[in-house]
Image 1 (cartoon, rainbow, N blue to C red):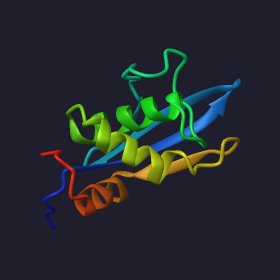
Image 2 (cartoon, rainbow, N blue to C red):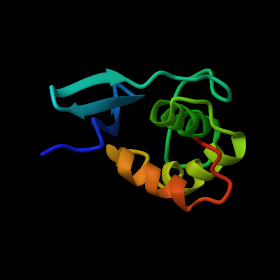
Image 3 (cartoon, rainbow, N blue to C red):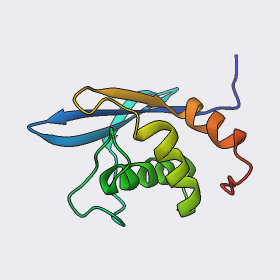
Length: 115
């Protein structure tokens, strides 16, 4: 059985010693590998955050979309993503967002210039 998708990603956030840490888990035919999500700093030099519509969540949304798309999203796109996904996450709990959910949301956007 073959698939057009060679890999899929899941993004997971948690608090470690009070810091917001986001890990990317990649499932491929070779198994699962993981790496920390790179922080593309634009709004928050202090790092990622979630659970409210601020600067840390803005950088998290931008960084997630950059990793998923392989390109820097427009501010309109990552702020929309922040409002839809990131701002509503519980502040003191872990979370996961899979790549398929992100791509489904992107495909539903009329302003999603992400190709």
